[in-house]
Length: 231
Image (cartoon, rainbow, N blue to C red; front, side, top):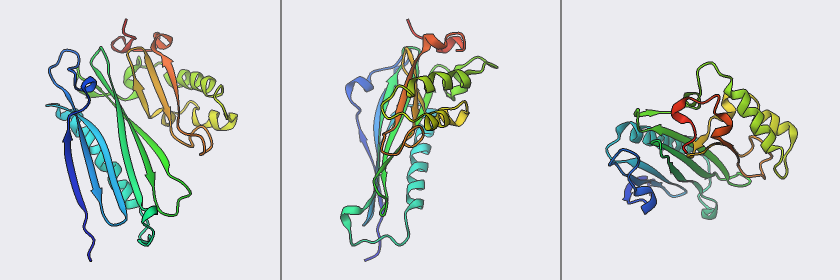
């Protein structure tokens, strides 16, 4: 029988706390799901959209589709179908913070497995969106031009990570060193910048992903005024 691959996009109203209107807008967050399956692999990824906001929705959908495409392309061509318990999968979920200043901060958390791997592994990604300006936020957008924020975040992160159980100095200082790529995954709350470190980035693979929460007040001299801590 020939392979058949199908995709289903389902609409599910997100839980009440995420369906609430955000600052200065009547728009609402909803949940969508990308579901694709064939005989030996599956993709199930949940993601949010904002009603009527094409910029945010396009960015989220492009991210989800690119992640799913990358997973499918990485699958071994010769994987056996004789072991259904070892089928490949990509599962994705997310959390959302809706800030008082109108920023929407999304963390994607993926579980992935392919046949032959010793165990599943996790991958994270983030999207931060300022509803006031209608633009996606890079980490650099939070800080004043010309300030050396990467070094400051590295210093804080290394100090925090070295206090964690199973911390290994070399791994921490490499994975949280003062390099932009080490801080690609971040989220925001009203009072904190949360830096997320991928599995294997700052510790051995047996240790799950780690994070360091930095009070925005601690970065006040570096932050643009639009992103200072909410009182």
